[in-house]
Each structure stands twice: as structure tokens, then as C-alpha cells.
Length: 249
Image 1 (cartoon, rainbow, N blue to C red):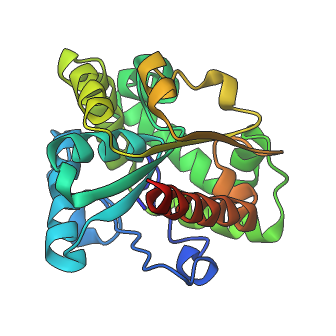
Image 2: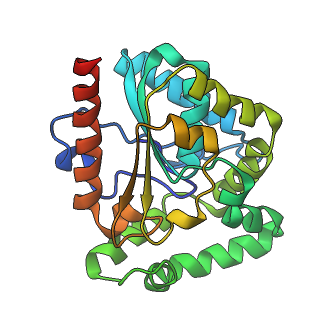
């Protein structure tokens, strides 16, 4: 599971909710422990792809499913284009396809570093407000999770990755990456929240190639924070459906 601009995806304990699969929720470069936060200023999405490849080849050592959320969806597509034999399929959860998907990243990338740092500290200090602004009721559990998410990375990492998203997903190379994944017939499943699905700019060729486009009801972009059990039920159903398709084919 590849997290987005704010990590990680470990906060809702997906391994315990998806006990029939081996689940990995890595911290991308610049996230998590302090030893992983140095020299982030010039981070690219390719740096994150390289990191995921190290994990897959070194630890997993077999073709695997990639679930990418938001920025993680872009990383998953790039990884699959470059390493098709290592990918069993992609679950793209409102991943970045075009600049239209990067509205928050574009805003962050344009701010002076000191302004963004101040704004981010305010977000950290008010997790309940962050949840409310995302359309979620700030229950005690969600608030505790929001605190984990907001404290998982420094402001410098979030801004560096935001800049990388804007730069890299606007490139002609990224458009070709998407086309490559479609042409090599990598199984793609699209998952969106009911409240945010209309804002997701999925290219027509991806819509045509996708095995399914699933909408999680009564949820927005942070659907795994809002309704983790439902999110995991959908992921489990996708894996079961993919196995059934393989048997039929």
C-alpha cells in the first residue's frame, strides 16, 4: 500500500483487517523516522518508485498487487510501467493522473517555505478542524488517526513531494507512462469516494481499460480514514474478483 502526500497507510491497521494477504505499508522517502527525512528538497516521484522497487525485489520477491492512494497512485502507475513483471495488478485509489488531480499540491508548491511551514503547524495543532474541512465527523478514533497522519512527515517533505507531483505528472513522460500501463494490460481497478469521485480526472483510456470503477459510498478522498472496514471489504472483493477472472481466462 503506497501512501499519498501525507503518510502512512499503517494508521488503520490494514494487515489486521486483510488477514488473508501479506500487507506492506512502507514509509516513502522523506517520511517516518528522522533518518529518512534528509535531503528531501529535490525529491522526485522516480525516487519513490526506486524505493518501492527495492522493497518489492528485496523483501516481497514476487509479483504483487500495488494499492496506491492519491500521490501513491501515480507512483504505482510509474512502477508498473517500468516493472511489469513485478506487478500482479493495481488498485488506484483516487491517484494523480493529471494536474487537475493535484489542486492541493499546486497550492502547497507555490507557497514560500516559511508560509507553508506555519500553515502546516496550524493543521497539526487542529486535527479536528482538518477532519471537518475534509467532510468528516471528528470522532475520537479519527482524531487520533489524523494526529498520526499529520505528524508522520515534516512540512519540508510534504512540500517537496507536492512540487514533485506538479512537475512530474505534468510531463509528457508521465502521460506515456499511463499509456504504457494500459497497453501492457496490467489489471487496473479504480476506487473513489462518493463525495470526491467527480473531481477525479481519470483519462478515457484508463477508464476503458479498468476492470472495475468502484465507488465507496458515503466517503471522500480519505475513505480509509473515514470508513476503514468498508474500504478493506472493497479491497478484499477486488482481489477475489481478480482471482475469479484469472480462473475464467
